[in-house]
Length: 357
Image 1 (cartoon, rainbow, N blue to C red):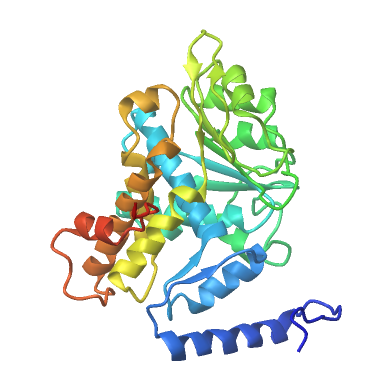
Image 2: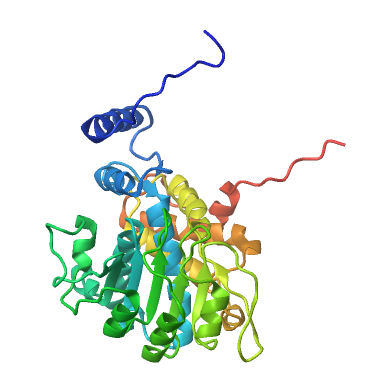
């Protein structure tokens, strides 16, 4: 056989044939490695990722990093931000997500689960505090229903005024947290000066996260800081430079990325040999990341720890992910370690090399 085999062009497999292939593959994984192998869905379309993770999450610990990893990172940033607003909990806030694919609903789902966990409610009830905006404006029952909207958006389709643009939506809902998530293309709307000023009028200390990827982002952290007169906390998908606020102070926005989440989640799953990866573990991971932001760092504008501490971040995330698995009874690596953090640090990979001379 030629060392570099040639493959002919053919159409991408889709539909039933695709899912039959994936089911055969997942069955082979389970037969070979059991139900504690971590399955990471990566670089697939958001639609396929969400469907596959939903189907197999009862059989394996499934991580869809582009959805659940991003959602946990956003939750971590929000948890840090509400400390500055001095509000009691997530339940005191109103969220608006501007999105063009499944990433927005995935983040909204985890936000709802976190709100329900902190206030003792159920996710169905608290979803009323979370609104979605797509290219056609605010998603409401007056605009569409199950025959015209994607199924993932339906839980966040509420009764409300028709708003065909982001400014009208902000004026109608008055969000305290505005998030932009369009990783696969151009965002539906820009977070321009009028939008940012409208958010600030409704909340004196909002959180505004323009997290779309690529050059066509909703706004830059510098623009958010300038237009909000330094009132808004912000972050970006890539590490932004420090920003000078209108009062002359220096703001240091964070990079909001799943890099804060998935390494620790993976280690926590491997350490505990858990059979599932549940929302409660992702919420605990987000909370662990948020708690690592000091008051001084928050005062400087950071919503997430500096990347120089990423190894410590991963250790803390792994510890709480494993602890949740043991507490929930779905960890199989027994007995449970007496000191979870020590066990995490013992198993954590080190890139140091021995010196032989």
